[in-house]
Image (tube, rainbow, N blue to C red):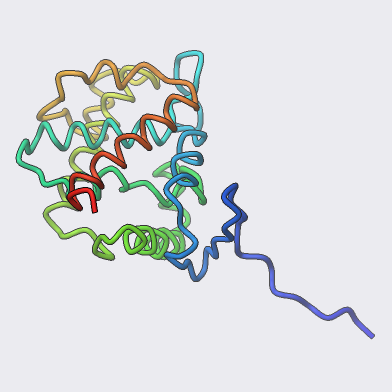
Amino acid sequence: MPPRETAPRAWQRMLSGRRLDLLDPSPLDVEIEDIAHGLARVARWNGQTRGPHVFSVAQHSLLVEAIAGAIDPGLTHEARLLVLLHDAPEYVIGDIISPFKAVLGDGYKGIENRLLSAIHLRFGLPPAAPKPVAVLAKTADKASAYLEATRLAGFVEAEAAKFFGRPAAMPDDADEFLQPWTAGEAEDRFLARFRRLDEARTGGV
């Protein structure tokens, strides 16, 4: 009798003990501590960056949120939180570089969007960012990519500008965000920023 086939495992166990199903993610299985821990250990640019530490997605997310605030100083706390979490699904699926995303197609994007929706719902945010916030996040993300490319990943300015465009605005402390931090520092700073924005958004409730 042939062995009975079983469905492949589609969940990942987190350090919090949660089991997050990638195909059907539940907001109840999302914890900010897991997100911060994972993002602080996921390398941008597949690790092809200068410095003694990887430039993590957690650090990138903080830079993107700072750039968004420089572009629109009147940004609400909720909008800032949505920008901060724009790459949050990568805590479980990793940072797939854009050329490979193009190869993977819509299947990858569907998984990413379901995870992001579950993350948003877990923290009382809309399932999808409103279009103006999504557009701002994309603009800030490209500005961050330009800065990372030229400061850390070996791109010349003309090449980076071709792919990402030149930043229209930068925060005063941009240089601080472009010095790769340890995983522990990136995790702590991401958590602190999330909690500060979330408390300000909810009024401490």
